[in-house]
Image (cartoon, rainbow, N blue to C red):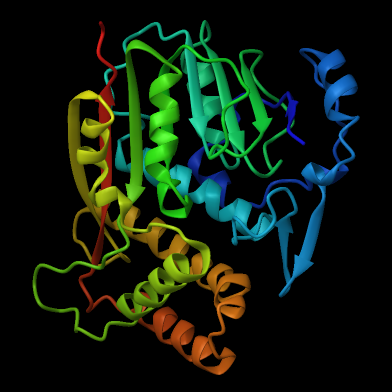
Length: 341
């Protein structure tokens, strides 16, 4: 069962970077009404009693029940905090910008696939008040107070879309690595875009890099990513390296003006540059929160020995605190346009 819900929230201007580290309120305890369209909140959202809004607790973490098992990461407070911190890091990376695609000053329909906590969609809605902005995710973890032009769906983006089409801009951020068929999702996006519209992928490439030889071959985070890649590919059917092929895949689907920009984001605060140190601190914390999320359901269900997993995660935590390792992760921004004719 798929359900649409629209909720409200406070202005995104109230959430500056220092506040993002605080955990959000417990959404389950919030009133499910909207200051903007209470009829939607009451007749649709409040009536949702199916598994869409249900959760299950396993391995000490909370998981969504909708499409249970397809997405193996939790949706509890710790994961929400990590998602919000990722939003902060990406904004810092782009010096406050939310996208690189040249979408113009007046896009009318925007969709955020795998919206997570919805921060990106909400801020885009604030930036383009005349646009209709839709966020789609498997979990209902978005805030209550929204701008009037922002809506959220609980849905699986790997299914056929039930929401409106004719989008001017399609956005995906750190989503493709947890899809079973990311090319199919991009093809669906192509069919639902206006001619001349843009699509943008913002993805972390899970390959540890180093330019000065300070990172050894057995660097713990490298070993962690190797284990994660095996689990994602063999146990869940994901494609964690899809981002490396994304430009060619977009071209095959018919997109034009395909562009790629790769940022090298440090792991930790080893750079001298203040901007890079800030990025490194954010990424270190995001990675630290990724460890227990992976060690819970994904590692456990794939048969990894608990003692081995615990030892690996401790090695990674120790390495993340070391400034002598000048490691970084590539973050890929890929954007492309649907032909105008």
